[in-house]
Structures are given as structure tokens and as C-alpha cells.
Image: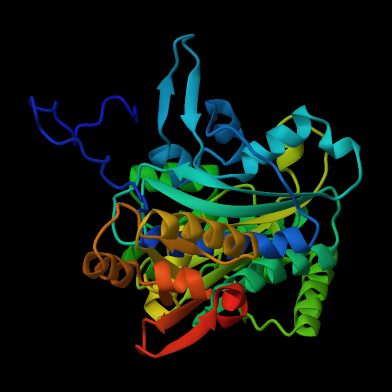
Length: 428
């Protein structure tokens, strides 16, 4: 689908207001502060675990995603924003993060250094989906990848980092679902019986073609008739090789040690073809149909598929938009959760100079400070303080400057106290 030829938009008439494209998630104050808090909360556990930033382009050669993500997926077959650039090359806006990270790891030789290569990223991603609450055409994710070692402890650490991010936001009404998609031998044995089972189903031509590319995709089909028909299909977890089963049991053991609860979901396949082994998803109970707030898994063959070494990796993508909606649904944050510590109202030029000096000192101490600019009268400035949502307000005039003392008003309660200017940091 070309981003330059969308049938939903007609040419603008002269003077008509220009609006954001349909299905784009964008954030403006005051809600943008909550978005920033959620994003940073999801990133911080990765930083603390030694993961380093990788910043990637938002568009790549289309072949990266057709080869890396899989042609049988809805992402590749239906949802990518693909167009020809001026050099007649096929370019795609990134629909997910792992393939691009893997391309960069191969291109820049990060797989030749200390392993695992531990990377985190965040940013916009693009899928041509039908817009609805929690499902956008431009959406935001935080992701990590640990590339180079096949160790069950790394699987558990990756899951624990995601769990820590959600807990840092304050979320509690979510569950972790896990399964194993096995190794090549496991999937080969399972495929034989699954293909036989699917052969007995009545499928339309498109679904038959999709199943031929990857029969596991039918487990991810949301149509009720397909879900009912697949209810008795053979499950991959029953075909795990001895090594795959041992690896998965070890992952569960580590999660138990970390105190992270989980639910086994043997029908989980997720939406991307590169997953192998440990696979997981976080599901929030208050988000309705779009309940997934993040997930990931191991991808043992992806690097080799993209022309690199045959190294294993595991990672996740966490939805910042969905996590924000979940936090709002739980009531753990709202637009008033992120306000300034102090609002300063100066009365006169000398007071304005003092206000700027005080603000600079307090900001240097880590406080968020606003000043009433524009030389407004006290009544108008107080209205501005009230609208700002600041926790405290002070008025600076000649008497306050001469006495080096201000009346500190707590906006929520209206309570006031006399405070020395050089004690404002501890007072607020």
C-alpha cells in the first residue's frame, strides 16, 4: 500500500484545515507527559540490565521484512507501507523492530564482539491496519534484543525486563502468557500432523495459500469459524524435542526463581514467522480486543536468513500506546500526574529577575519550576498557576524580596506557610 495514494483522503480545498493522517497516534500536552513517563519506565529496566541504545532508520529495503518477518504473516501480506523511492527501489516503513536490529548487527559486525549483543530501541512503527482504540497505523514501541547466545537464563531475563517495565508504570492487571515453538526438528514433526489436520478443513483459497506457507498461522486466525475448527488441532508443545523441552523447563524454573507468574498458552504463535523456542505475550485484562501490551520470543534462524552467522537471539517489543491506555484504565496515572513542583508569580522587574534566579537554582536541584511571564496582574497570574496544575505557588514582590521570605501555597489544599527563599528546595 503506497503512503502517497491512500483512498481515504481527498485533496484539500483552499483554506481547509490540515489534520493528521487517520490512525496516527500522536501526543500533545498534557497527555504527552504521561506518554513520556510510560516510555521511559519501559526503557529504564533495559538500561539497568546493560542493554545499549541502537538508533535505526524508520524505513528499510522491503526485502528485509519479506525475508525476515515472513511472507505468510499479515504484517507482510497486508499491512506494510511500501513505496518506490526516487531510485526505483522498493522501500518499506518499518512495521516491527527486530529485523532492522538484526540487519544493523550484521552490517556493523556487532555479532563479532562480546556476546550476547544487548541492544534497546524505541520509536515509531507503521502498519496499514484498520484504526481503532489501541490499534494505530503509526504506533510506538520500546524493544530489546539479546543476540548471540542460546541460554534459558537470557530468555528469563528478557521477560523479567519487560515485567519490570510494566510494574514501574504501576500496572498490575496483566498476565504473562508463555509457550515454546520448539526447534527445527520439533516444528518439522508437528508440521506433518498439522498439515494432515488442516487438509480436512474447508478453507477459502487465501487461507489455504497462507497455511501452505506456514500452517501455524491458522492458530493466529481471529475468525470464529477458524478458531472453532482449530480447537482440536495438534499442538506444537506436544512435539517438542528433548532439548527444546529441557530449555523451556529451564526458562520456567528461572521465572519461578524470579517470582514472575505466568500462564501456559500452547496455542500462541504471535504474528511474526521468525519466532522459535520461548515465545511470550503480556495481556492486559482491561483493554478489550486490543489486550496485548507487549511480547516477544526467541528467533534462532533469523540472522542466518538475513545473511549473517547462525546465531540465536531473543527480544521483545512493548507497546507504549497500549501500556499508556492500560495505565489510564487502571487509574495509576492521569493528565494531572505530571505537573510542576512550583509556579512563581513575579510582580515587577526586580521580582522577575529574582524569579528567574530562583527557578534556575531549583531546576538545577531537580525540581520542575514555572514562571508567570507577560507581566500579568496577580489575579490573572493566579489563574495561570491554577491551570498549570502546579503543586505549589509563590508570589514575589518588593516585601518578599526585602525579607527573603515568601508565602508558599499548596494548590491542592490551599494551605500556606512562610518559607525562607533559600529553604524552598526542602519546603517543596
